[in-house]
Image (cartoon, protein in one colour):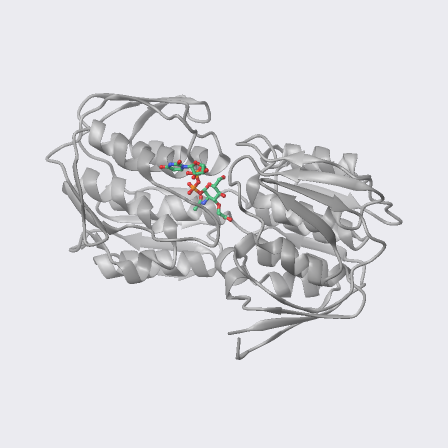
Length: 421
Ligand code: EPZ
C-alpha cells in the first residue's frame, strides 16, 4: 500500500485545473444502463472509485473505453443484472445500479453495501422507494434481490434528502408506468447533473435542481453524451490546501455556485477570494486564520465531505472554533490522527472543539477514509518537518492524483509504493 512522505511548510502557488466530480460520475455511469447503446461521459475523473464502477459494469457485460477523461460505455450486451459483494464492499455507490437494472431488466441482485469507516449508512430510503413503486425486494444471503415487471410511478417523500436515494429513485422512475413525484429530493449538483443526462437520454423530468422532482415515465430511452460537472469537494480541498499554507492559487474549471458556502467560510476565516471567468483564486499570503465555526448541511450548506478538511484548517486558527457534522454524527476518525500532528481537538458527540495551535509538527499518521486522509495531507503540508501519511489508497479512491496536483503547486510531497501498513 502506498504512502505519502511530505516535508511541510511550502506556501502553495500557481494554477491548477479541477477534475470532474467523483460523485457525479458514480451516478452517471449506472444511468447509462437505462438505454442500450453507446453513451459518452466527458470530463470523467481518473480515480479509483470510477475504475471500480467500470469493473462492475464490465462484470455485467458492458463495454467501456476510458481515455483522456472521456468515458464511453456500450450497454447493448449487458447479460448479468448482479453487483457482487466483491465490488460493492469496495464502494457503497455500487448500490446506484439497483434502480437502472430494475428499470431496464425488471430484476437486480445487488450486495448490501456492508460497513463504512463511519456511519451507519443505511439504504432504507432506496429500498422503501422501490417497494412503493411495486418492486418485490428480498434480502437473501447479504444480497438485495429485487424484481418488478414494470415499476409504477408514485408519490415519494424522503424523510431525509438523501443523495443516493434521490439518484436511485430518479433512475427507477424514468421508465416507470405513469408519473413519479419525489418530494424532499436532494439538490446536490451531482444529482442535477444526473437529471441533465437523463433528460438528454429522453427522460421527462420537471424540477431538476429543486426539492420536488416530477418524472413522466417513458417506454424507452436512448444513449446520450454529457459533461461531468467539476468536483466541488476537490476544489474545496485545494482551496484549504492553499489557505493552510498561506499560499496563492488559482483554480480553473470550477464555478463558484458549486461551493458558495465554503467560499463564504473561507472569507470569514480571512482569505481573499477572487472570482474570474473560468474559475476562482484564493490569496492567503500572511493569513492570520480567524477561528470560524461550521455546521455541515445538505446543499447548498457546508458539505459534510469538507468537514475533515475544515477541521485541520481551524487547528491553526487564532482561537477556538467548533465543527458540527449534522449529516454523519461520527465522521471524526481523522481527529486522533490530527492530534498526533499536534492539533488540539476534542470531540463530543457530533461536535469537534478545535483550539488553534501555533503550528503542527510532522508525524506518521494513518488514513482511515477518503476525506479523513485528505485532512491528514493538508496537515502534513502545513506542519513543520516530515509527515508520513499511510494507506493513501483511501485518497486515491476520491481524488485524481492529488499528490501530483499539490506537487505542481509547490508542495514537497512524494508517493512511496509498497508500504508494509
Ligand atoms: C453521498 O453519499 C456521497 N457519495 C457522500 O460522499 C456524501 O458524504 C453524502 O452523499 C452526503 O452528502 C456519493 O455521492 C457517491 P446520503 P450517500 O444518502 O448518498 C442517511 C465522499 O466522501 N440515509 O445523502 O450515501 C445517511 O445515513 C462520499 O465523496 C438514510 O438514513 O449519502 C446520512 O445520515 C462520502 N437512509 C444521510 O442520510 C438512506 O436510505 C445522508 O446520506 C440513505 C441515507
